[in-house]
Amino acid sequence: MDNVVLHVDDVFKSFGGLHALSDIDLQVTEGRTHAIIGPNGAGKSTLLNVCVGRLRPDSGAVVFDGQILTGRPPHEINQLGVVRVFQTPEIFPDLSVLDNVVIPAIAKRDGAFAIDLRQSMYSERSLTEKAMVAIEDVGLQDHAHQEAASLSRGDKRRLELAMGLVQDPRLLLLDEPTAGMSRLDTNRTIDLLQKFKERGMTKVIIEHDMHVVFSLADKVTVLAQGRIIAEGTPDEVRGDPAVQEAYLGGVHE
Image 1 (cartoon, rainbow, N blue to C red):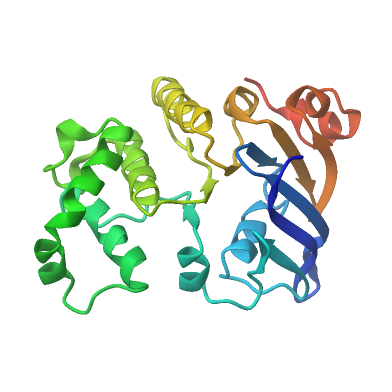
Image 2: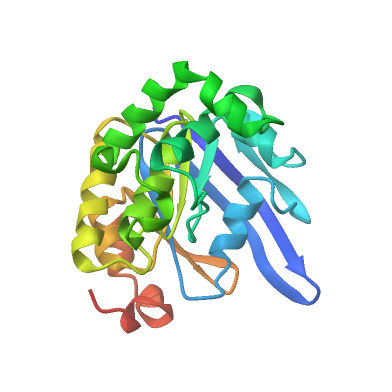
């Protein structure tokens, strides 16, 4: 029997009179890649923010591996193994690629950033090897000692992916992992994520590029105006008339 590791249970979230999420019930199965798609303003990023504790729902709950996440602060949720990679890379531009990956490894271990971060980084050489493994995983080993600000956009996205991987995620949440990438960089990222999928990593991906979604997803949930309008395999969703009308009809691969 498939193991549901994340259950978004009847979540409702509003901002004033705007219903950003309405009666969202979603289940993510262990080892699978679950894509969430929908037009701008559908509630996708709001849903991720609820899952990682950045927003608290008005009603409903988020449960991860039997533990209620609702009401917990983001750092506690991260400690449980839920790791988010943001749409806009949140890196330390003046530090090297290696230092960027060591920092979240320290934060994950200690539960918070060290007070003297620079001293902690250079006294924690035991984490350097672990960081290098993550860097090699995303193909940035040749840039390990390069300043992060000098990376291309695609490499910055891969750097943030390494910063997520070094935290040993049990569930990796990816918000638009290929946004702004060239087709070449997009295909390289698909190959990377496919490699992690083959390892059995559980992932939730928000993505506008249907080529990415249909290349990686085992299951797709479609949001529109804060509600789930369709859910199923990529082929089932692709052929759903409601999805075609709300979203896919305006997308060209």
